Length: 269
Length: 308
Image 1 (cartoon, each protein chain N blue to C red):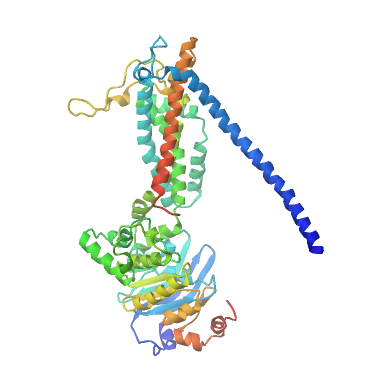
Image 2 (cartoon, rainbow over the protein chains, first blue to last red):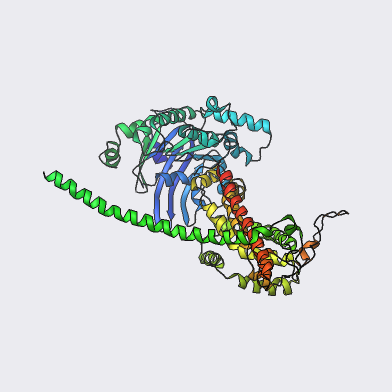
């Protein structure tokens, strides 16, 4: 299955890269609702992979499998595997603690969700729960994360201010800094700009493009232009199935599947 | 022409509908007035009767057979100590139960039954708690007719209020905040201790104070467990001059509380004792209002940081 997908992806458009994660026959069900059906895909290391599709197609559900977010709620059933490289661990295995998975894979949410704490404490929280107490280490890592999230210059003089006093776009960059501070292997974005104005959206998109040198990125978006702008690979999903997965340029210029083409050209969805 | 006619019709419809607005306005203001005026009437009646009796001596004197010498020293000290025990017992129990139900309890039939019953407990008549406490605390556990027994009884009484307030405060925290903490790899306990409890503190505190404000006026359960109606000594002081300086003997001391003192005076035939009762009632109402005021202040102050 994996090989099949490997053949259909032509890494020529982007740079050829190593595989960070392989999704094998993933299914997900909550209650009686089969939300994901037999998904096979690869995630390339230090590349941006976009998940697109109409509302309710399961793209967010798929994303939230990567950090076992569904485990927070009752009646969830995973099937298949999500293998993380290089250690070849199936993060969906019942033997793997979801907390361990969440420490390796960070997430940025749809609406900015800073904690009602200071800017500094927001970014430091992930470090604190990893047991880092030394002020000097915390300060260094918080500064690094804020720099990587392109927020340092704006907030360096008011790190003790409440995070709620920042603008929406700044709050979202703060949440990105919070997710980056712990040096994750994969960064998940769940429609990160849907609550933001166009200018803030542009800055977040620029940031995502910059971040790809440092971290593997998976992004869910309902905005096709956004997927085209920021991603190297795109997966089109519909009704819980992965319809087509390929290099972004191929998906947008000459998709192989009629359904994908209809969606991309706006005939549907 | 047609448009003009149409406009007239629209205006007629609007003015007809607006009549209901004004009608409800009048009805609403009247309903509010009935509630507020009743309280003001009661309070001013008490104020006129009791005000002349309020003096420093009234607070520092024990009850007496002579109305002009009688005071509420043992009553307000008793009330304060009982409230202290109530708060110390009810807060940790109520908050822990609320956190468990919201964050830890699995969703199943048993949890649902417990949830419904917690809400129902808030409606159980207070005398029932008194009977329970008489059997359990006073006799079974041998606490006697003590401050400890009274405090625990009232703690049971306000436990549902604290639990419900805790749960509501926790539920008002957006899902996104909770998920944000978990997504960083926090355990349940870390999420509760670092986020859930601090962000819901204002709501919890408000619930606790509203609970205590209810408990402070409770008479029936305290009488049931056998509080004294005439007591001319104070419980042993909690701070001692000699080692180990702290004493918990007061927990086991006999006591009386404000509402019982009032009840005792009201049932006396002499007119002068009625003034004493009014004065004590005034003190009790002011204590309750102060507690509610504190709740409002704390809610406002603690919520300043939080916007949702």
